[in-house]
Image (tube, rainbow, N blue to C red):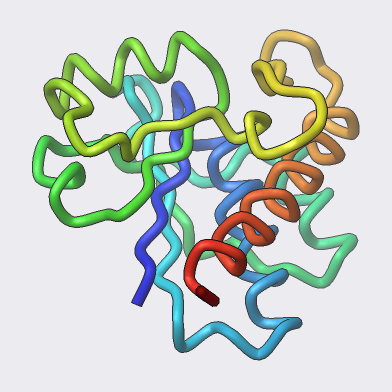
Length: 154
């Protein structure tokens, strides 16, 4: 089983979007038994809070229910428990490394590094642009799933 954790600052916008988009992609390919997918925050600001309402609306428009999701923080043990810790931006990488320690096993990556346009997924909490964040996250999840399928089909 491949274990993936998506990471952002508060775990109420980008990382839950990635978690639920990836779960849907995996399900659509009949691969859900091969994956464990979660998401978490690098900060403590939103712990216990639900997914941000604009994100819930976007996911609901795709018939994706995220109502049970509550924000959690990355733990040191997540580094050993997960195969991939996929961050939304460079600040997340810096902050997760403070929690988990050095990335000696090359598990921590940016989501958009699996696309033709590497870089950060802009935080819609600040930009207000949830649609662009969703499109970037979807493109990243598709690219990441392609990478995983290539890597493990050898």
